[in-house]
Every structure is written in C-alpha cells, then in structure tokens.
Length: 239
Image (cartoon, rainbow, N blue to C red; front, side, top):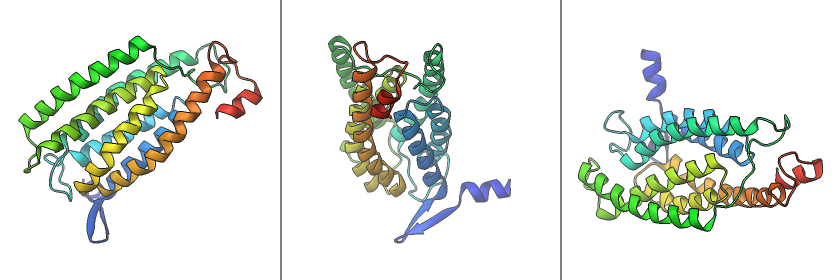
C-alpha cells in the first residue's frame, strides 16, 4: 500500500508549481486514445478508459488530495460519463467491424443529418443550463465565480456529446471537441491543472487534423465512395 500511495501521490515541480504525475500519465492515455480514434481503431476505447480513471482521481480533489487543493466537478463527472460511453463505443465499433476486412477501419464516418444536428444543438443548450445550475448548487469547494460553472458545464456537456458522436461515427464530433477545447484550455490553466491545459492545447491542433481525416473518410468511404472495403489507394487518402 505504501508503494501504491507513493506512486499515486508522486509529484513533479515545474516553474514552482506542483503537478501530480498521474495527471500527466492520464492525459497521455487520453492522447493515445484520440490518435487511435482518429485512425478508427477499437483499442481507442479501452485505452481511453484507463486515462479517464486516472483523471477522475486528479479532478476529484475532495476525495483524492491534489496540489490545486480544489475540485473541478464538471471535469471529474465527465470522466465517469467517458467510461460509460467508452464501453458503448467499444461494443459498437466491435459490432461494426464484423464483415469488414481484417485491416479495415472499425467504422465508416458520416455527417449528421439536419434533423440530428438540430436535435443535438437544442439538447446541448438545455443540458448546459441544467448542468451549470446543478454545479452551482453543489459548489466547487472554493469561492468560484459564476462564469466558472457555465464553462465547466459546457466542457461536461460538450464532452458527453463528442464521445457519444465518436461512438456513432459522426464527423461532427471533431467540431464539438474544438468548441470544448476553446473553453477547456483557459479554464484548466486558470485552475492550476497545467498538464491538462497543455494537453487540451495539443488536442486543439490534433482535433483539427482529425476533423479533416474523418471528413475525407466520410467522402471516400460513404455511399458514393469506396465503402468499408478500401483499396490501397483509398486507404492512403484517409489514414
């Protein structure tokens, strides 16, 4: 137990700020999951789950001591949702792989329909309003300004949508992640979660890249394209 506690609580200091190693490791697992997700590999889901568990302990400061001495409940809560959605995504991508070539991607991306897009935009607005109220009622464990709850609510809701969309193979999920990153980086940095803020910044560039990869894949592999059984030429275009 002492060895585990030492590993769990290990910290490094950068520019006078203490950071838990588990925060760095958790974000590295998240980055690996994102790269595999862009390549539409089923392993993206279990690897992501490991990172989610690590990051839950980082953001839930009221249960697990951290150098920041406070919690980000929206960030912690979304890790729980990530695990639940990742289990669904893991199953969905495995089902999608059936009948495909051994080396073919797990899914074929597509854009959402107009009806689906209107539905998730309205749903997102309602959920953000509800989430910020719930977070404000629970409190942050420190004198957080009101804007904090709105930003944390959007990160929570946007992350839920993006992960579910990824499981469904919707290209829109990359755009939602971009919107999450635009809010997440400043919030995490101002709250002292520097590795997560830097990782979100890295995600920003990666997400833009992933968007164009999936956009091209949707065109090449869609109904008017090559389909799931790709030729070598088509595979070179989308991987």
